[in-house]
Image 1 (tube, rainbow, N blue to C red):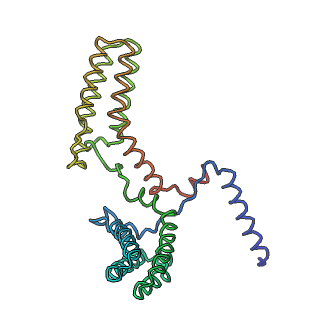
Image 2: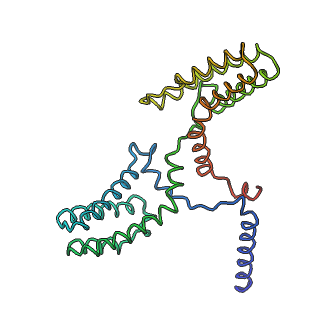
Length: 284
């Protein structure tokens, strides 16, 4: 095959792929994912959140350098610039793939400016360094936090034979069964479904406490327990309106509030970590 033909075919392929992405732009999102080597600096691969601590140090050191530069304090400025340089360069040591993203010229100029007491140059250097940091944060901060800091419930089990996923589905069915039975005047079924829901919530609470060991808010807390009592009372003697209102309150307290934090972040994490294959994408 002639080189000209090969180049034309490559060009056509790029145009076709680009056209497909553009046509499906409402269903396609392109994001940069961090290098796999970053995982070693986050839990559970590491006992401590080493990467986060290094980022916190950089933020504090940049603030200190700005403060002492603005106040023309040469002694303290040199101390904090040295720390800033150390932890900035550590980024490339920890994740070699990102070494080329470091602004080595700016960090070097920053050190020299501090040594020579050129305070205005230090300030300008910090501005340049801040832009460099924000550039990487724009590309990677959100997806990195999602991948390495969002909870992963995929391996959590209620018992050896029941996964957390199945248990949550059962709780959802029980909530809906209460609503159905309530609207259709089946009091006994509604009450028995509430009893099952109550037991399921208590069982879930035992699982939650395995992570929230130091949390003063125990699931199900007193507010949820009161909501269950109110719902039971309305199912026995209350109006259909009261039953619906109390069931809605319980669903918000016992389900929606936790889902807003845990399920949302877990589902997004799963999207990035368990990425579909090219075959699945093409089929979609």
